[in-house]
Length: 150
Image (cartoon, rainbow, N blue to C red):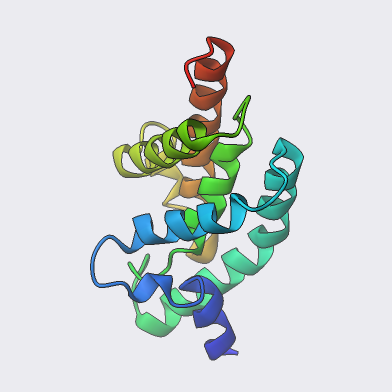
């Protein structure tokens, strides 16, 4: 079971990238998202379907590594990136790029309550902060789209 958890938690090895593994996880999420017929519902369903396995895998991998939030766990970035995409009013190269930048910004900056959600136990805390960063990214992406800025 630890092997399966590690496979999911690292998003099939993306978490082993030697630098910026979270950004690599976000790019992997986009690589899956781009070929889909882009609709907010698709990204909502992807995020929802991945949530349970992500929490489980992140918790198992964190316990195995003896760390609260190991850097190699990037499945949380994948879910957060998909959640950000829910906010797009159009899907084009500008919205994809903006979604990436917005999600990474909120994930790194961690405005309230993103940082506080990290305190939740085990895999829940690992994933919850990225879910909230994704929500912030989606709101800003939607607002920018309403003004036709992409």
